[in-house]
Length: 100
Image 1: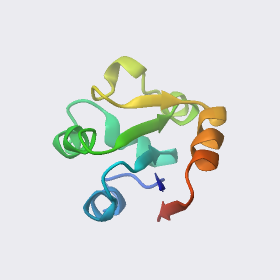
Image 2: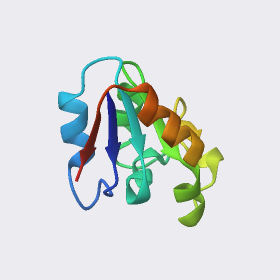
Image 3: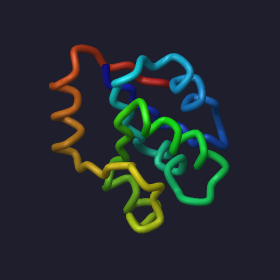
Image 4: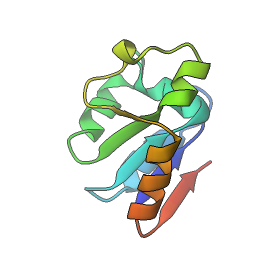
């Protein structure tokens, strides 16, 4: 299953809820303000690092760029994808859960 999160972790607890309920092996894609979750040194760093052990965690590159977040500032283990990667993830997974 692909889980998408578009809310900042400082605004809502969408990422925390997703991480509690996502089954191991799920793909997690951070989009829009959700990309703030994958910045090194943020309050979410330990949760995201732990999540990369059971899930594949992605961040949408254009949303990182739009927010001035460079890839070298990302937590180790987070993969960056473009819109084409987003489409591939959606097509490769049998279901998509959007966390609002």
